[in-house]
Length: 165
Ligand SMILES: NC(=O)c1ccc[n+]([C@@H]2O[C@H](COP(=O)([O-])OP(=O)(O)OC[C@H]3O[C@@H](n4cnc5c(N)ncnc54)[C@H](OP(=O)(O)O)[C@@H]3O)[C@@H](O)[C@H]2O)c1
Image 1 (cartoon, helix red, strand yellow):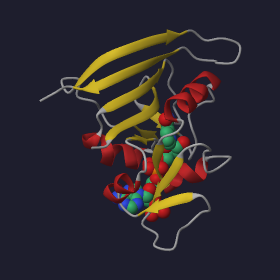
Image 2: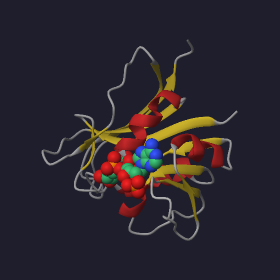
Image 3: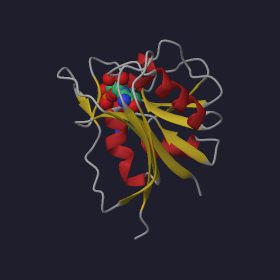
Image 4: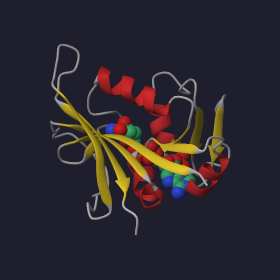
């Protein structure tokens, strides 16, 4: 059975993006994202895919979900539903990488959540991560990082596992 992980960078108020882009550029989080997802299948909404400056992301099977029957892109696996996307994944661990619509739909299926909690908020944010019921999740790791000359905000890398029912 496939193990479904989600990875997301979330502001203090649950925001994840603004105007079709990320909230901020945090090189340490980009590096973390690359390390965690490398070699695995990654599933994303069409809007998130099209927000990447360079695409598809190398070293990972890029699976893009769209309702557009004609949409395609070189090097990308296209899916027309979340179930189709998970079924098309070639790796045992599948990473849901956003955006808001896809996190919302996939959260009930997620076993492990890799959360980067950014200690800041943006008034212009327009997309949000769904609210988490912490009765359903157990924090298994947390690593705090202060801000530095390359990373303007403090953040925590947090790993949550879904509690057994
Ligand atoms: N902070 C983070 O970690 C993070 C991560 C990823 C993204 N983001 C941000 O999130 C924002 C994008 O999120 P979003 O919610 O606007 O878009 P999205 O989830 O990336 O993509 C939405 C698109 O996915 C397709 N889709 C959604 N549900 C579907 C379904 N059930 N069946 C078939 N296709 C489906 C549709 O594509 P079609 O319109 O082609 O049919 C829809 O327009 C951006 O601001 C991005 O930067 C943040």
